[in-house]
Length: 346
Ligand SMILES: Cc1cc2nc3c(=O)[nH]c(=O)nc-3n(C[C@H](O)[C@H](O)[C@H](O)COP(=O)(O)OP(=O)(O)OC[C@H]3O[C@@H](n4cnc5c(N)ncnc54)[C@H](O)[C@@H]3O)c2cc1C
Image 1: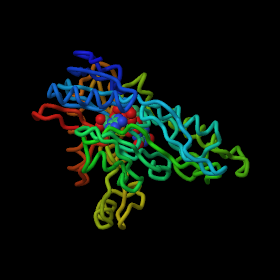
Image 2 (image 1 turned 90 degrees about the vertical axis):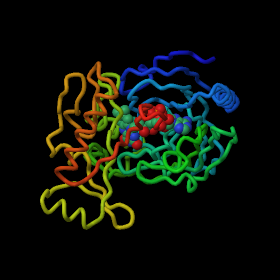
Image 3 (image 1 turned 45 degrees about the vertical axis):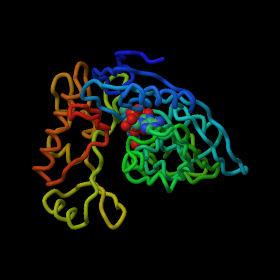
Image 4 (image 1 turned 60 degrees about the horizontal axis):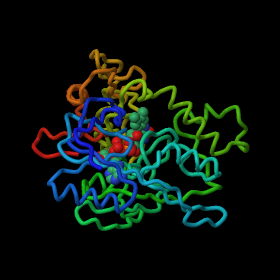
């Protein structure tokens, strides 16, 4: 069924006004292929939707929005220690994380409470608290939007990088992810060195700590720092942390000491975009209906009534100001859904 003039706002954590000409949800590969054929026959552009937690709609979408609803958690292999598990793209990410913890499977406890669905998790190689999807990804099954072909991508073929993948990169707009498989490990090492996890777990002796303890700590830290999208519209970090050369890093820190940084690939340095935005004076910036979160400068918020275009105008002002102050060009992490250039750009 294709619903016309569909109001998407409630499906978007940014909570901005947005409609699509048509909307449908699909739960099997066959239903997905039917929707793709229908869109092709009627010359409609296609936009895939998961949990709507990493998108900013600048305006209405002229075409068919397909929400991928595939369900199911299936164990492919279990050798008593390692488990290979394949999950439908429409499963809620955090619900899946909780299931793995209940079963004693380790590996994604640090990714607790990330909003959205399993299908979008490879899109930007979701990451938090020292763990990225790449650490546990086994394969991705995806349907080609043009031909309907089902293809299995190995973890390597997904070309995962920092907030990047083949699906967000050179194969952008070509595939609908329908299932994602993970390799989890009952004895996986707990990762507690990132952020405040260690502090949160101090009261538990090291040898007694479990995957659940790490998950609980991550949930507690996230709830204290990040705005709840059901209360304050947002899409998490709006910008990526820039990755720069060592020479550029030294140049910036000469004038701006204290910039938090982490080693990146090829001897480059990842620097904290939130710090740059904060020091440029934007933290807590208020434009009435929208602004910059007062606890986390990386998060832009819709306080109620903002449009996507207004949020984007604020983002552009921040980009310009950071460029002026540090000569660094911030890039959005959130997918911009805009049709004002004649073509859907997402
Ligand atoms: C409060 C908050 C905190 C967050 N914290 C983090 C964090 O710590 N780390 C992190 O990495 N991210 C974080 N995010 C961002 C976001 O939750 C993740 O990127 C998440 O994986 C997006 O999932 P989604 O289902 O909501 O994707 P959507 O927003 O629905 O879609 C995102 C993109 O993927 C495409 N897409 C969606 N589903 C599919 C599919 N099945 N096949 C192909 N393309 C698809 C869409 O077209 C769109 O381009 C946060 C967001 C919020 C609101």
